[in-house]
Image (tube, helix red, strand yellow):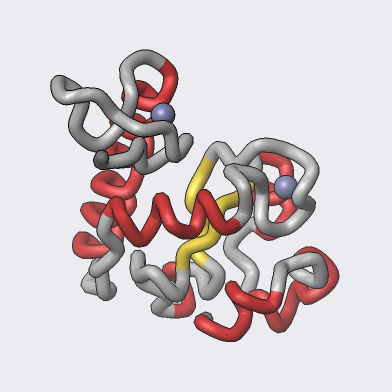
Length: 128
Ligand SMILES: [Zn+2]
Ligand SMILES: [Zn+2]
């Protein structure tokens, strides 16, 4: 039985990646988000290799929460190395984040704004 990529529930015959309702909406929204970020990176001449399955794996790893504060739900993709420092939209450079953390980190390089990334779990750091 295939399972929902988002909630792990078993899918019935008519369902493919996600179960109906919330998971489908969430999945489609994340697909759109990944696609938007890839377009922006390509426009800047940066790498853009992130695919939706990699992104969903990140979201699941962080339990759909912000990787920085781990208190609020992730609502955006943060580029760990900002595009201004040639950070592309790649699996190793993208972490889930909430709006306040994204705004706080802004476009600073993480080393220059380290107080805002102290909370980032080791997996994201190791693969960055
Ligand atoms: Zn589901
Ligand atoms: Zn946050």
